[in-house]
Length: 134
Image (spheres, rainbow, N blue to C red):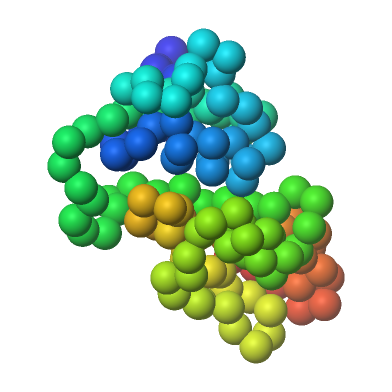
């Protein structure tokens, strides 16, 4: 048997602030053991754990790894609006007129992530076109 991913770790300036943002996005919770000012803060969610670690250097280039989010109970566009209201910024809009595509956003510290279509939206496209959407 191979290894399992225990956490995805994200370097940042303010672990508690960024963890709080991501806990809201993911419907998770900041660990009860973590407090503002801690150098490491864990977010537990149904999709897995994110660990935020304080580092002295600022983010300077595009992420080499990023998260792709798929909304569970709302549309892609509604999720984009919800996450923008939580403090994200829109980096690039790859949504197409036919409803396919995704949006690239950045969290409050500039880490990029994508919001894809929900499973229901993908199934609807497949039912209409007969083609499984990418």
